[in-house]
Length: 170
Image (tube, rainbow, N blue to C red; front, side):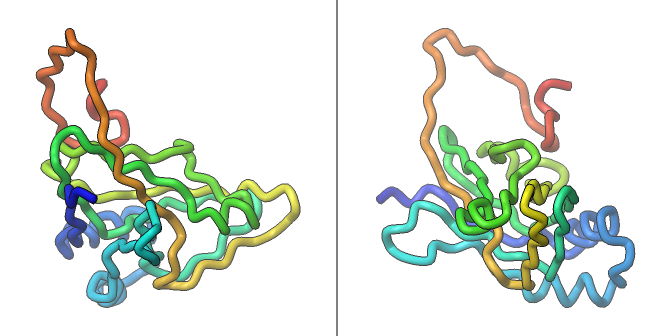
């Protein structure tokens, strides 16, 4: 296996911005404690393709509801690689937990954005069985898989990224 990437925490300032935007009920002290306890994504077994992302805080997601989670994580990877994000299999199977954009795409140049490449995820509990998703802080809720990609022979992309969520088409 090639080693092509490294996970990092975003700065406390960047994490604070993301948390205050989505969860104004958390105090600065709460957010600092959460940031200090963040766990970098990792594989559960040597045969695992996916790196588990761990919930930075506990949350409950009733059917039909959505939550935007600042993970506090960024990833530095070699060019020509992408990190694809999916819900953990068990949560998708048991609760129909879904990423709102179906599959999250983290490009290699996102690491250098003004927001430090802070990875956010937006999840929806699409349960049609009335099940509420309960995720405890530190529990794996999403997984990321690194894939190498190619480009067309006539590709001439010269743009530079600064942000995420559609920033390259603005």
